[in-house]
Amino acid sequence: MTIHYRDHLIESDRQTIEDILKSTAMFSREEIDVALELVDEGLTKGTASGYHFLLVENDNGEVLGYTCFGPIPCTRDSYDLYWIAIRHDLQGKGIGKNLLKKTQRVIAKLGGERVYIETSSRSIYEPTRGFYLRSGYRKEALLKNFYSKGDDKIVYFRKLSTKKSS
Image 1 (cartoon, one colour):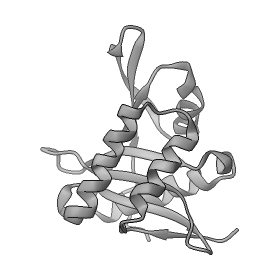
Image 2 (cartoon, one colour; image 1 turned 120 degrees about the horizontal axis):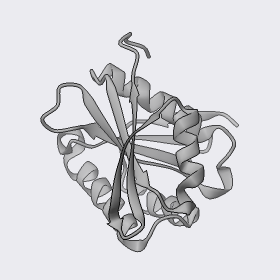
Image 3 (tube, rainbow, N blue to C red; image 1 turned 135 degrees about the vertical axis):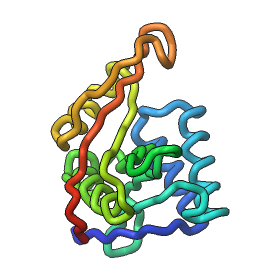
Image 4 (cartoon, rainbow, N blue to C red; image 1 turned 90 degrees about the vertical axis):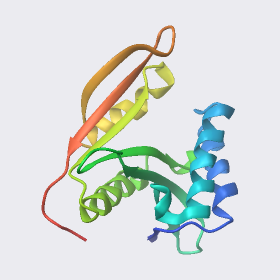
């Protein structure tokens, strides 16, 4: 399968992203609503929203997954990766790994040197945490009972290469 990347949102992406997030069976309705708020901001304001999107598509233009990321306010060159999601039936095929690498290259081109990702300590996120570690991130912080009692917030970090790449 040949894949392509697109760095702008179109109206139909809102429903597609919702479908992708639902397909993973990992996110609550509230979490999906937050993701869609970022999509709405991106559709309305573009990059002026502070949110950047990278979508991965197949040859037919079907969206397989996406990332949402942006500069962290009041920092010089730190970025948050807010969302990364791949359609459930395509997980484990390297699409997410390549999407994350491409996202990191875009962040570096935008002047980002550090990327932070936060996630939950719930067991359902164990594969996600392993993915971040295998992708060169390290656990930077743990905030006990952040989301709820027994559900910690884990922050991952990666320093990007300072070389400008495509």
